Picture 1 (cartoon, rainbow over the protein chains, first blue to last red):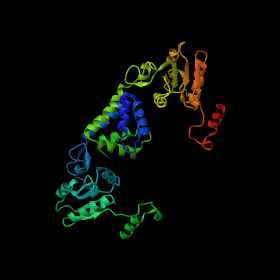
Picture 2: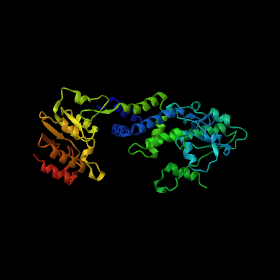
Picture 3: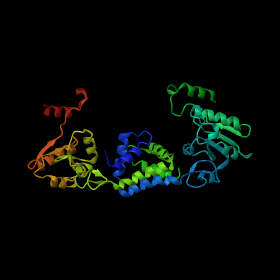
Length: 192
Length: 192
């Protein structure tokens, strides 16, 4: 047995995705071998996550009341892109081409896991839609859960605002013969 | 960009061995999604590593002045097993058959990296060797560095005490045709 402090950290490290005992041991010893200052800093960065809140407008992660995207007056606030989780916002922002704002649902409808529409942040999305809203873009995963949620929102919103969905199809750089048939049939349906 | 607190943690996580940006992001979000209590505990376990010291006798990791192995009077204090790092002690303890004590060198001689004998904890090892000492077992990695260190210690100690070395050979469960020739020639030399 290692001293209790090391065993504790090895245990904690195994909470990280894909980390088993051996990797957790390596991680714990790496941290142990850092200088005391570096270790304090590491520990503090975890503690500092307490400052992270959800943006009061869109649900994005932020250390302020309202996130930098919602506060940015240069963005088009009449264009709302709906995502399932805050992480997706960063992925979309990396395109560097979308100039609207976002709305985080915080999940997707998943009846088998008992996640129903009322557990998602749809209420605030409805409140944000005004007569000025030009478009709601559904940027949800092309999975059963994502498609179900998209369909639900489409039915709910289509009489009030223009609703669009990200295109499904063959990923750029992929080869036809490596593409699964579901993706292929989507690409066919969406052909231009 | 994520909020600064998340970016900081992603940066810290990349200090762990084999962790790149994507994995660090997954780790950071896993920690973010823990409850505040669990996060505090995680952060505290890193902080608590400050209590870890090196045993004043053998150099093993401990949260006391002297490690539990050195304090254990049921162990044979006249048998000293020399290892390069504290982690090796746990590996050897898992055999459940060695009843002596240990000595941690804290490294191996590596001239290309400028690690010379005087940077290892050999001085304390010499002090621990008394006329009562029956055997010093060198349990060092069968690598260039380990072999160099073993040879150095052997020369240094052989006139004072019986020195032995762990056997090299084919690992249990391995197949001859998958064994490299260096290991094979060692196994030949050491045949019984």
